Amino acid sequence: MTPAELSRTVRHAVCRAVEDDVLPGPVPEQVTVERSRPGGRGDYASNVALRLAGPAGRPPREIAEILRSRVDTTRGIARVEITGPGFLNFTLGRDSRAELVRTILRDPARYGYGEALAGTAVAFAPPPAADVRARVWTDTVVRLLRSQGAEAAVVPGAVERPALVPAAPGTGPSPDADTGPGTGTDGGQDPDGLFVRLGRDAAHWALLRPAAHDRPYTGPDLLVQRESNALFRVRYAYARTRAVVRNAAQLGMAPTPGPYAEDTPGIPQAEPPAEPPAAATPAQAAATSALFTALGDHPAVLEAAARLRAPDRLARHLELTAEAFLRFQESCRPLPLGDEKPSAAHRSRTALAEAAGAVLAGGLSLLGIDAPEHL
Image 1 (tube, rainbow, N blue to C red):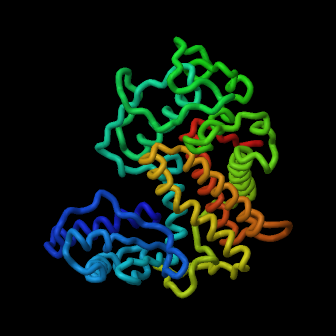
Image 2 (spheres, rainbow, N blue to C red; image 1 turned 90 degrees about the horizontal axis):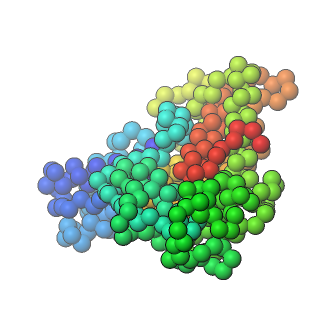
Image 3 (cartoon, rainbow, N blue to C red; image 1 turned 60 degrees about the vertical axis):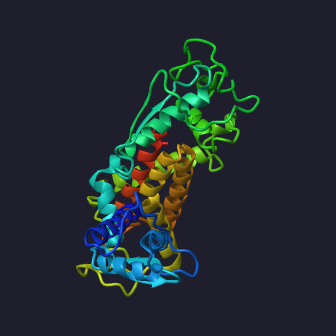
């Protein structure tokens, strides 16, 4: 179960409680679910009971009890606990990691897409032809909004624009400088020759990775293929995921999600595995957990990037996902080594690598950046 699915599950429980006249309305448009903080319990937590307490005129813990009774039997949730004044804490079942990988691989290109903004229509004013950053930013925000079910487009005569401050000196014209019809390589003018110098991929990363109020760096280091270049790390990590899948195919090894030795101990699985995974070292458990966290958070990151018109959030998440995968590959070795025979652990790790590649490729695509299979 992903965070987005857990959020929808809790919101559905609120809807049922309102329909049963156990709670008064209104039902919130969305329920926030986030990673448990230090001192909390389980995998995720939500403050929805505290938010509903005021309108309902009930103590938060009473509302939390009502919601827990409607959630704790949901498939994929092993345990629901209440802490503090009324926080709901969720522990996911052991099979949830394998199910997350299955979910990603079921439709890799659209993992993280949703209907959170369905019914929302957004029309952006066309950016000035000479403002390269505003053009790229607007086009990317439109793609992000559509990924969450919104109707979004650039419409002549519209007023709204994604939040962008005037460009810093040396990074191009200000958003108000409109110097005529577009002549650039990305649908408009390119007065600084940014796309000519860097190419489309590096130019997009340079303009989208910094937050809207930060000055973008457009120097030659964006083209350097080394670890210090964040764009290279993300694309290299994707290329490594594809290499793992190709090499597995050459060994006749089909990626198979789960079981994962690093799953939370003490929580029963829906079905005991026919071939139990070998015990994981602490380093392997930490690397696998970090990668699953990054993959599971991807839908929530896409939704937040769309709602806040902030593609930089997606770019930073891709960096985190890439780093998590590279640590996982180094610690866990998805493929057999030497005379070692392929095992259930290798098949499940290969499936996890393929899922990581899907997230990296999908995120880069939304940013307008190519994901090469070979680097």
